[in-house]
Image (tube, rainbow, N blue to C red; front, top):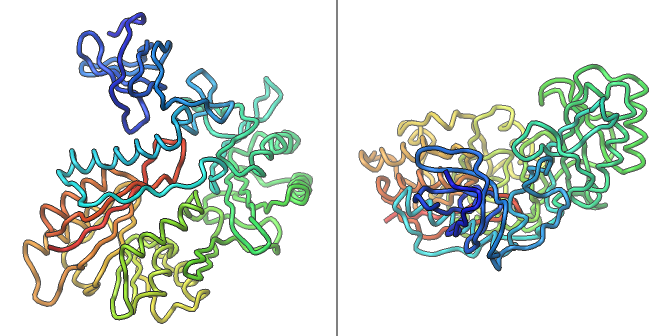
Length: 453
């Protein structure tokens, strides 16, 4: 095991933003808080035959990439907030690290090298988080309420007074929220507040979803209304599962986000999956569609279409687009969004389990000139495998898409699927690039473009 007084030279950084070094025995050591080029000492927390993991305890040589964290709750110490892992890394370096993670995954897992590297998509480093799930805990022995993210590697809620990755209005609301919950009759039965921010002509619409395990008293409902009026927020209540979410009081501005480049307005519920970072999403959709380049004579399929984030913009450019999602509820919501934007003639939707697809299924959905693929973290293995099978055994009545734009939230599953597309389905990876959707975290969003031949 690495001795506490041994100095290690950090050579790299991994996907979880840990420094990577080797100790005197040659064993790999993953070090929280360490950066490439640094010389550090470490306290080992886990030790296996092939590797060790620990936290930085002393720093002898500092990396030029190291910066002062922008949040007082960031750190490696007990009680530190676990919401961010990379605040000690320069913002531009974070983006470069994520780009390298994408390239390394493609190279090592898929044996694929993109012909062109796309310029990384990045935006504001602070105040970007328009969605968040905040835990709530009443602590009787301290006589206080905690509202925020969990502590690093802990089930406890961090004692947060501010959160700079949240919009300033929400960050400044954390302490008033603590006081509000602390004064409620049901304060020990309120485990969670979910944040969702929409866009409207008059400005941002802040929605807070309160999860409550018991019916709220009239006094508590009055406290919520008073808080909402004072701070300009919408209260939604969630007594059970996500389907039970409803507004405390009807009326007020609509919760929606916009894609101005395409004239799209998309209403959503605060518990719907929408992108955390609206600014980056706007740029992401624009770039994806420029790379896809649909034309008025083309048919496109959008796999894993969600609420229509890509489907509806594609419908403004293509002859026809089919959006496919795994949930009937999401499909219905997508249809409503298409109607809201006057796109029902060119945008249709279907519900299907996208993790169980066969070549017959692909043929049944018909030929498409191009595909947009935007799966969850599990990736699109079944889709890629079915496409590879059709390449091995072509059908006379079906032709594969000539171009695929794949938007990913997990570089390892993107690499797995890229290996299938390139080595078994007849595609080339013509471009790939990182998307910094979650600054200061180790999360890597990315995009890749595949073309036939």
